Amino acid sequence: MNTPAHLLIGAAAFARPARGAALWAALLGSLLPDLSLYVMAGVSLYIPNIPAPVVFDQLYFSPAWQTVFAIDNSFFLWAAALGIGLWRGWHLLVIGASAGLLHLVMDFFLHAGDGRPQFWPLSSWVFDSPISYWDSTHHAVWVAPISMGICVVAYVVLWHRGLSVSTKLFFALLLAAELWVARQWLMYF
Image 1 (cartoon, rainbow, N blue to C red):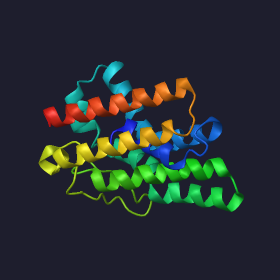
Image 2: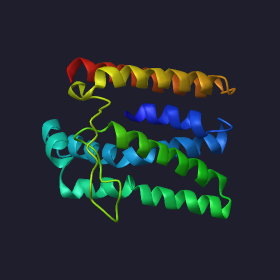
Image 3: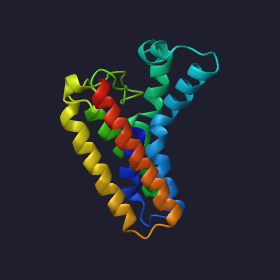
Image 4: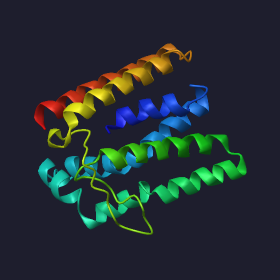
């Protein structure tokens, strides 16, 4: 899924209350599995000016990048974080790890041909889902509208949790970004 979708869904599912540290923990947990991609792609695209096709068709699938993705998308590491949070009673770690695990589960089922090795360090196996959130040759024309609907529901849930005006605006921007990106995927892929 697109990162804005993960942020909306993770916050709606785990940020209770939807403010302060609980909200930040849910957002951080939802973001961390994708953060390395943004950093590596951003640096590659804008510092040495590597062309986008090289970044997303070659570097993305390179052993070095896949190793980073294996670590930050590891079911085992996120489950360990959740276990530690539960064991120690660290509520914010439980929220963040739960949001991260939800992110991984959604990605596991919605990446066709571009999945990540989520069973690191025990395996480098990658599940090649028959379903994609962006690729219309793998049912994105059905998945994207469902995903957009879930994001709208997540936004409504968050709205009803008494968010501040600035936080409502932040989530409205995330929702707009998700709807725009999903539309772009469907138009071009």
